[in-house]
Length: 638
Image (tube, rainbow, N blue to C red; front, side, top):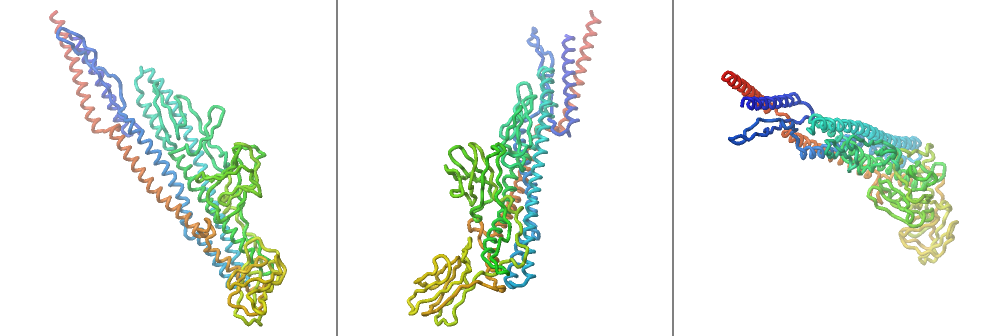
């Protein structure tokens, strides 16, 4: 009997000691990040059967258990990785928002200054200082385009740096997780399968750090190890084995870093759509969804401005009496051959309609049956079974592929506007070469007796007619019969018996004019070269009118409104990310509090447990003392 009481007392003493040790462990780790409260799981010893029934044999410590809620932890990981992705995007887009929101150094004031200088030339077309001011403001506008493109390129380089840094951290964390997996398997095996709680807490803390970088899913194996999957299910850690990620040049655009998976001796490119959540997913989403669009949008404005200005400038005449040349140098579309293509493969791409350009990139591919041009922003495409050529190009959104040497399965990335702001340049540096005047002048003979008047006329769009400045004479029949003859050199000239319609367009030699009123018999009108037209401002007025002309988005936007749309888009997206990132952070904070309420250390509760376990320990000691007394009594009476 005494021996049984002694054993029961010892069992109580040992379990109380374990409880005291565990409580002390909880208290000392109350501020340890990632620590989960632990408790001793108790069970009764096997009783023995006596005459009076089953007699208890005390207690034993079955194991030490973590207070751990897998559901809450999984929920917190999902909330956390989304929060980190939003924070990453918000931090990045703030750089764009600050750049575009700067009122004094943005594109709008520089554009306004340039067109104000054009209006000054229209007021004083022969004044050299006014012309010089126009060139100076053109250079300032070009410098602004260059500066904005450089800032966007620097942001892109920063994105690459963040990608490389994130990949390095992910690899380091995966190595640590695989190492602790090995330690847990060994420790639990040596302990007869009991959970290595502190090691599991350390592993969970590493998972939290990894989850900040990329969306992470985990599966616990039967041996206690944990498999880790990232993105949309790509294995990263399998027990004690790890797969490495690598930041490498994109197959389609070497200026962008992308994420590859090293699997044995092969390198597998991970599509950006599969890299979700965390800082890495957020920065990749920012690059593809906002940064590239912004750089393309700025480039598109520069290219459309340059093309439309050049087209109008070439319709005018400069101070030397020559037709105007190109005012701006315009970037060509950037074509990138995929790194997997054959070295001999190539395509030629050009812009066929600047007004139809979008801010998207395009992919040109060949599947063996069709040549396809795909708009990457929404995957819309056009196809042809005939190899594109200059005579039969494949065209989409103003982008034309005019030749192709391409093998089955190959692809090319076409970036129509990405270099627009970077490569725009001034081609005219001589003030005399500004084509402010129109090349022709119209007049009515002083002997005319009718009420007919002739308009100043306009030059037809490019290409220029080679006979543009050949003199023309319009003479109405006498007696008047509503017909007239046109004399001069050019296509279709001389032209006789032309029917007169008041105010209707009359076009010869690439020059269009109108005659209003009612001409009389024998009335004569002439079109002649605008020699010595230094005070003529008709073409510079047309150039100034481009400021408000809807030359972009298929005639739906001007330069200023297109830029305003970009600024508004970035500003709205910034505000949206600010609000959603704060909301997500608050949700994560609430989830962490829920976890802490279930698994965190409550010092008041642990203090109460300490007193309770101390009393249990003391009571077990009393039982041992009583067993000893009983044993002594038996010895005295024996």
